[in-house]
Amino acid sequence: MKIINQLMEEHGSNSFDKTKDIGELATEVNRLIDIQNRIETQEEHLSEMKREEIRLSGEAIPTLLAETGLSSLKLADGSAIEVKPYYSANISVKNRDAAYNWLRSNGLGDIIKNDIVVSFGRNEDNKAVEYANLAKSQGFEPTQKLKVEPMTLKALVRERIEKKQDVPAGIFNVFVGNRTTIKKKET
Image (cartoon, rainbow, N blue to C red; front, side, top):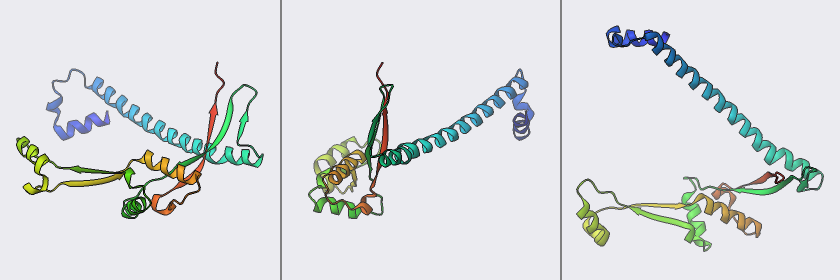
């Protein structure tokens, strides 16, 4: 009801004169606020559970299995627990030039995508066709975007590490860890 009173003060009570039941409106607004608050609480709880999942999967279980000399374990119910290496990498804006130079100098430049984008305004279809044929000779300046797809970089890093080949961890923000997978018994 507090929100309805605020709205009435801000917009004047006349804007609500045609509303049949202010009480019903207030009830629905309050229900919406309650639902939004509950969603926010559930999202926070879900984030906490995901952090705990990462800790258990990447640290606790791999450590305990390693201490017993195992990398996998089959349970009595037929399910299996396995710890596998996990690789992650990305190229920060700060390291972009160094990363691209390293990739090119190591014969890996073909994983760099090179997109050139040119924007035209409304009713400039003719200019777009001309540009496609004549490009810079018409005075347009293209925007060039270089990028490496995240999954391609991750696969490259995994492959090179597994083959014991050089990968500059600092340039590519490389993370190597473990991930636990649980395969449940098929029923």
